Length: 342
Image 1 (tube, helix red, strand yellow):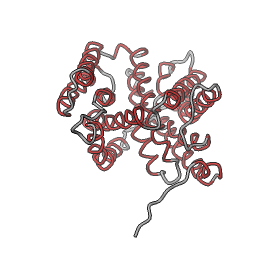
Image 2: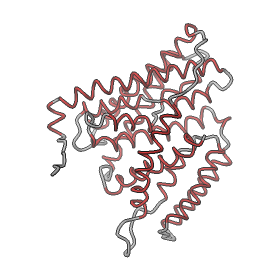
Image 3: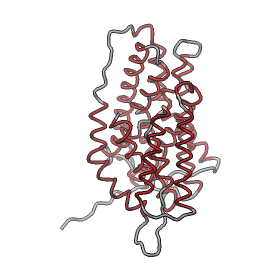
């Protein structure tokens, strides 16, 4: 609970601040730029769901349609950083934005498909307090961080009590924190908070998250043969459906002039990053536990499938990224800059 629900909310706060900065001042500052990860995320949700239903429509497993639509933002970004010398660094914000939109869609899916597990009273209260934070920012112009963090803690608690994945509270808080500086300030408080949270997340929270979630207990004494469609639906949905949906929707939207791909990127480099979206892990496991709440055997099978799909996605990313980093069009569009040392 401490790691997955509380500490990861802090990580999501950092992610939200980074994306907000890019939306206001950086690579997502225009509609066409900002819409690219949104179109990509829609494809990364719709296509995996379709693939899952192709295997499981009309079966006892169809309630698990929400499992392959999610991206585990922490693990995906962690793998990205491990492979950063092979991946286009400019696409980190794309991956972050894509994963956040993924998680937001997943929350709506949870609320729509599995609403019996959601306490909307607490959820509405959380949104009410988020509105208060927005009012403090926009109308009252409060530029001190502590009031936002104190009320933000209550927002986290309300979302946790609602049954929705509490990490999303970090994004709500990030949206509400001021990103403009006052006359007597050199930097806005969002910038200051982002730079304080970055080492905390990278050096402590993410490693702790990895340690806490790689030791998942699996029941291997189960009849996998009777659940082959569930296994195929999850693995194909995550490892194939995710990159296929992301690339298809992004390419079509770009060709129609609705969006534009990130500056300094090629379709090959985008593809190598889109495969990482197939690392569903904790969010997918969370949905599987809701979808199959009354059937522990189905949950165990889903966990095995999610782990296999995540492993396939990681290996595939390494292979494609290695090829992309050596591809001439990749190197032409993005030059790695190294600082000279004395």
